[in-house]
Every structure is written in structure tokens, then in C-alpha cells.
Image (cartoon, rainbow, N blue to C red; front, top):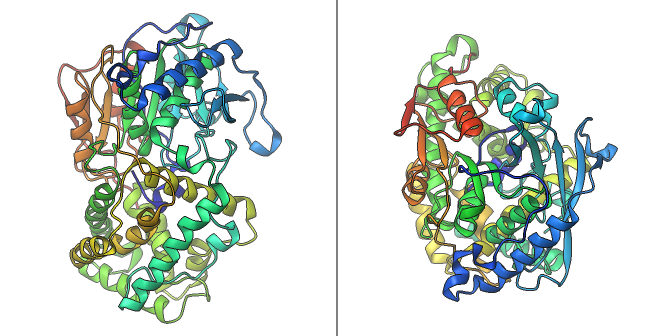
Length: 535
């Protein structure tokens, strides 16, 4: 799971994986039986969706994908190719309204004999685009070189995202406008104002995208994934999912266990029905505070470079001073506390942001405000980027609000977030307001799927850093318990979100071995952390 900050960064993040061992067959595919969805065998509500998914997959297998050079404005270099896969908006009505999903691919770099099929990727969100995945080959990403020899790398925009029938909740230029209100409320009036904004946002989603909202769910995206699998001519799915992409993989593995060949999931959303999604966001607030402190410790250790204090307390004091200054007079007229948080939160997300964030902070304290404005303020001239940002947030909200039932009583939100904020102030209220549209969501909210092992599910490889802020460690343990035969690789004393694309031979070699051979270790593995960032 994740929040706006994670969504904005997922494009830079690459990782994760796919499941299970079985034979991968290219070419025409027979229609998967309706009973591929275990719910169908018990007469549950998913019965019609399961049958609809089988119909859509059979249709896609017959149609295939008409691969062409990618449109110039997609900014995907040759030899990456692009195409479309058609899916029903509502799987209960497979012959009803259809939408087209954007997909792209690059062929395996090895010989035809080395090829093991397609590896499909989802970077997270909900709301992240996977279309950059094949550029790991064109950019010669060394971590993925061995996997690229065996697999076509396939990316896609999930339903509602980017090129795939994009949804929207508000005018993008309004969405990015700054400064926004301080997320930390000073009064009941501040809370009322934020509640009003959240309610208006939910209403805007319905006004602008109402026809899609009821169908913006993780199970539907998992069904889309199965249709893409069929359109590719693959009998079984090889999948790599990071962050929210792990929950998509968990749901896919539950609905279509026999369709999984290999699955790598990296930085795992807790799939418990009790966690999706309200409690998961509260858990995230606690983990972010821990990782924020890890970053402050690192900054203090490198005080000779950054001059922000040689203890965590001194660095925190500088942060609070900056925050107070921005609240009183937004820096450059546009960077208030909300904008500061949008920039600084990348440090607890990703180790790769530790030094850049510290450098900008250091420059500001030394008297250079422009670097901070450039880093944290919106760019109103970047209309395409702003539209992408708004769309990602719309999909995030739509999926999480529609996937599960959320508290509708404000007292519940107020109690839980007030309590959490006392000891975990970095992210708590910001996260609350981001998710509050779910309290007044205008379409039906579902009960989350019970993630579990089904017949034919192969060993799934789970990769997780111990101190991940966006997807706390307990999520990996929970999925490991639910998917029998899975293996958990823990990166100890580390906390970067998205592990599989970092250079750590202990992790990289096991991911390669799994993707290339299907083999996993006889027991769970603990790896030493990847290299600490240099100042």
C-alpha cells in the first residue's frame, strides 16, 4: 500500500517479481476455466466475474497483441514495442463496455532457446505506470541483465492509469497548486476545512470518473492481468510486483493460482483483510517515523558534510524550525509544510534520496532558499507531469476506497490519528487527509479478498527490507504465512522501499536463480544490508 508520496516515486523504483514453477507455453492459449477463480466454486459473488474473466481471456488469446513502434510521445526508445489489450470494465458483463489497456515489451536479450516467456511488471501505487519496465533493457541495467536474457520484459498501465482509460478527480493544475494547508491541524476549524476538502475530492471523483469508479478494484486489475497474460500467448504468468504491486500479485495468486509460473513480490503490502486499507495506512505512519529517524541519524553522522547537527535531536530541531518558518511564510511564496513533506518524505522512502534531500536541506540552512523551492514547489508549466500526478492520485484513491470498507464516522479517524500523531508526527495527519475521501466515497465499497494458497500455486519469492516505511515488514511475514511454500528474503538493518533493484548480491543472485530456474532456498534467508548511501 502507499500514499501519494509513494505513488510519485514508484516510476523511479524498479523491482519485484513473479511466481511459481510450471511450464510456460507461448502461442495460442485455451480459455481458462471459469473455476480458475476459487470463489466460483462456492457460489460467491465473484462467480460471474470469474466466468467473465475466462471469456475475456479467451477472447484476448485469440486476438493477441498488434505490436507496433511506440508513439513518439510515449518516450519509449526502440526496440521497445507498444500495443493494446481490450478488457471489460465490468467482468460480470464481459460483453458490455470495454476499455483498452496500454502494454509494451522488449524481447529477451538471449537466444530463442534461453527464452522463458514474458515477465510482467507492476511498480505499485495504486496508480503507478509500468511502461518504463522495458527500459531496464535499453538502459542496460546490470541488476536485471540475467533475467532479461530469459524473459521479454512487459509493462502496462493498469486500468484508469496513464494511457489506459485514465480517470481524474480534479483539474490537474488545481491539484498541484501550492501552498496547500498545513496537514497538522491547529484547531477543530482546521479539521473541518480538511474534511470539506476530502468530501469535495470524493465528489469530484464521481463527477469526473463515475462510470469507472465502481470497477476500480484490485481484483479487477488482477483479472486484467490475466487477460494480458492470455493476449501475450502465455499459458502461465511470470510476474514482478513492487509495493502495491505485491498486493496485486497476492490477489492474482489467490484468484488464479494455477496460472502462476513464477512470482516475485518486493516490499509487501499486508494482505490481511483487517489491514486493507485503513489500518495499513495507520501502520505506515508508525514505520515512516522510524525510517525518518534512521535518515536523521545518517545526516547527523555526516555533519561534516551537511552541517545540520551531529545528533538526531539537532537535525529534528532544524526540521521543526524549517517547518515553522514555511508555515508562517511559505518559502518562495509556494513551499509550505505540505510541500516540504512532499519533498522530504522521499528520504524515508528510498536510500537513494538520502543525500539529495540532505543536500537541499543543508543549502537552505546555509542561506540558499532557491534549491528548496526548485525541489519542493510545483511546476505549473509542466502540464503533462501535473496531469500524470493528478491521475496517479485519483487511481490511488479510487482503488483503495473501492477495495474495502472504510470508517465513515469522523470520530474514529480523529481518535486514531490524534493518538498516532503524538509519537509519530512526521506523516500521520498528511496520510489521514489523503485517505479521508474514502469516508464519504460515493460508490459501493467491497470486502477485501481473503488472500490464500490455491491449487497449483508455485513457490512465491518474497523480498523485504526490515525497516521499510511504506510497506512495513509485518506485511511480508503475513503473505509468507498465507502463501504456502513461499520463501522470504529479509534485508536486515535496511529500509529502502523496493529491494530487488538495489545492488545486493545476496538478494540479486537469489532473484536471478528463482526467475531462471524456479528454485528457492530450502529455508528463509536473511541478507546483510546493501551499501549505506555516501554523503
